[in-house]
Image (cartoon, rainbow, N blue to C red; front, side, top):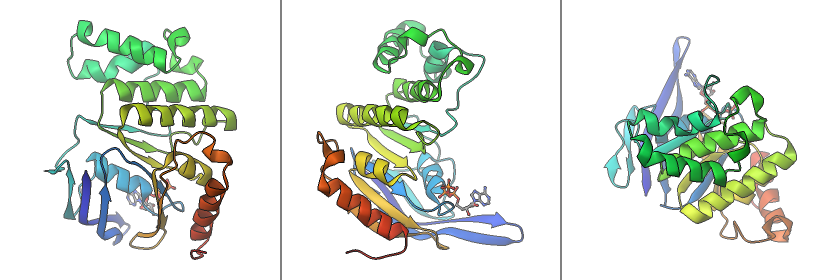
Length: 251
Ligand SMILES: Nc1ncnc2c1ncn2[C@@H]1O[C@H](COP(=O)(O)OP(=O)(O)OP(=O)(O)O)[C@@H](O)[C@H]1O
């Protein structure tokens, strides 16, 4: 379980300090797929950076599994929109990079790397360089690299936003599959209402105030059910989230 308790975070902008989070509280259960949605600038990425340990709150505390988060943990993986691949390394080298920097011997990790490359559908391009890949393939490499580290927490900042509609849908399926199989705790930031309802077992709608507020919390236990995207329940949740984003209230 992740607990964010009374957290404060301010950025210095020019001569002023702008409070993004003030006494902010959030609990994320183990195995949840939490989605954060909200207008640009409301603080979604900042929350991910706090959760990964790259930013330290100026007040309050974050604990993961009861342990106070003091610095980046090995079991947390983060995937960013720009993929974060090294252009001079091929697919396989990019995927195994995380294990290599942790000084694992090759004989220990190679079978895991091979397995994940297959699972991500990258076997045919494993000797290609990032410049030879499509956006969807690059994102699958980033995902594969994160998964080789066997994280217990996977944070994703708009990972699918640069992809065309069909590639995006295929990767949504893949993310859902990974979440269902591994039962990882995931936190996904997206601007897509549909994606939020398709992938989030709980969806938090944030408001662009100073400080940031949660204006809606939607429990979505049907996530992952076959054909969910075509149901009226899916449509109703999407409509509700839209109304919250537009500043309306619950129907
Ligand atoms: N390093 C920084 N220094 C000063 N201000 C910052 C810094 N990083 C972010 N901000 C500001 O903090 C606010 C929240 O930024 P953040 O990137 O968390 O928002 P976001 O909801 O992820 O936005 P987007 O949806 O556009 O990615 C914004 O107003 C942003 O300009």
